[in-house]
Image 1 (cartoon, one colour):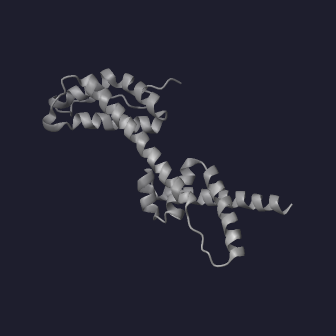
Image 2 (image 1 turned 90 degrees about the vertical axis):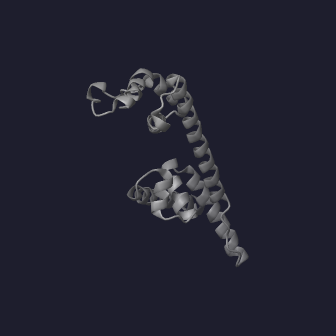
Image 3 (image 1 turned 30 degrees about the vertical axis):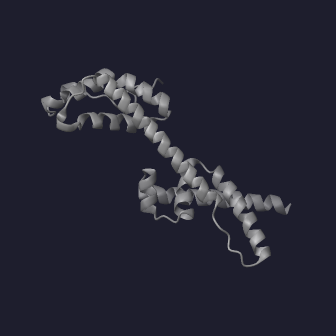
Length: 191
């Protein structure tokens, strides 16, 4: 299936735009005229539907909320520059978030009470970190933020752009998967 504004639900029917004031109709016309090309560019940069939809929406919201409802001299250039800047910012945020999550996973201190327990704890911690790294991103992100960074579910949900209930469900699924993997790892070592 080809990816385009229609398949993503990003087109706007101008016949039903009577409620839009005349000073803003040019925004709708721009969506119709430049939307397909804009989606193609965003798809090439971002590579997934959710991010493309977010960047597309942000771009047109910025266009619609220009100061004093000014129409740019070159609407097409403004749209594409705004869209690419939005997409690049999204990619940078994701990279930074992933970098910080990796630091949290790898640099968690171990209590140093007794040498034997410390060795066992370090081995267990290494296995657990390896297992967390193997989790799908959406599950691993919740585990890292909630368990390792000790953030409450509502803050985790806000950072990841999901509902609080979804964060709880993802954590539950991740814990079940981790328990299964850790159990399998112990069984292999006992043999």
